[in-house]
Length: 385
Ligand SMILES: *Cc1c(COP(=O)(O)O)cnc(C)c1O
Image 1: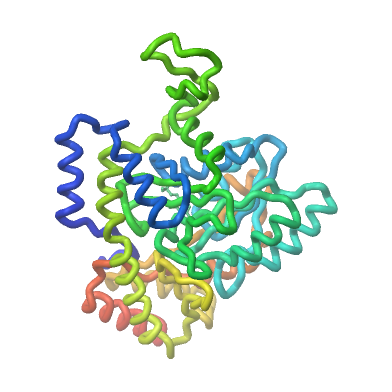
Image 2 (image 1 turned 60 degrees about the vertical axis):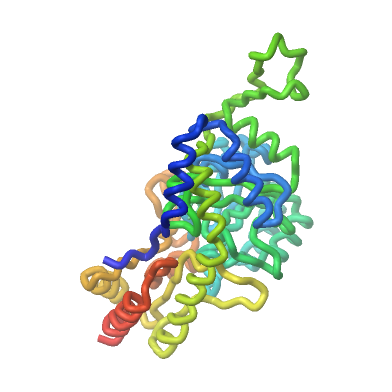
């Protein structure tokens, strides 16, 4: 089976991990900080906090922005459930903004309308999470403008978008947001096995996330309420978690990061081939923006003539013929857990319609020409038969 995505691990990655394993520290050494600094440099951010997953990073980001009971967080229904679960971890309430039918990202016009209504009802969100689906950046300038008008904070869920750019700036630079979160799960752009990172230009937010990442404990005398009792001394200042990344993961991440540019180039080359080969089929291809560059974590195609169960038939045909297609995502609000919270089918019609027609086809740096040709031929057979 040719999967829709997979990691690229080479000898230098393995060597980097071996070196940490043979060193003194497997966790809480200096490799995590090196990885954080390297990410800062690459995405042009001032501070980075490495954690054990993007899910943890989203949780810490919400806590750092003081999301709490009675607050609202809005995000896109077409995302992984972690994008909205983070609000529920904070006892806040979730609402969704329907997607744009062309970019599949949160629709700015739907957002604008919803904000106007929310203002009248005194229910404005504290945080909006902009998810860069497939690696294509959201219209951040417009969302940022609305944040000035309505006073919400912005988290970018860039789990798909490490290496993407918007208005010539790397995703993560924070020009239009408070915190950006990356994932290093193996299917994502670079991997640490499991892992994530929150980046921000705001040192106060970074310090808070750093504290909460490790139990709410500090060893920095400047943060303590009294003089340290001695060199062993630490203080717990808040109720935090063990969300730490370890040095084994960070060493893999550093090695992977050194290849980010070539990974993105390879993904873009594969995308280019798909655009060329699939253009005359009854398919809607990904939106290509003039003001941003997608990281192409996913290559999502949509059927344009959906007849009843054609979507499922094509999915099954491709799977049966060795193409590991997938669907990103089942609209979050249709999940049983979210239905229990009061969401209903029909709440976000554009997202639900997208779900009935979309397919993620294989894209990852080590996908060979032969594999891509076979994928394209099989897609042609599937949609034309
Ligand atoms: C993968 C993913 C996450 C969660 O990442 P983990 O590192 O697996 O916790 C969050 N949001 C989106 C959009 C993702 O794709």
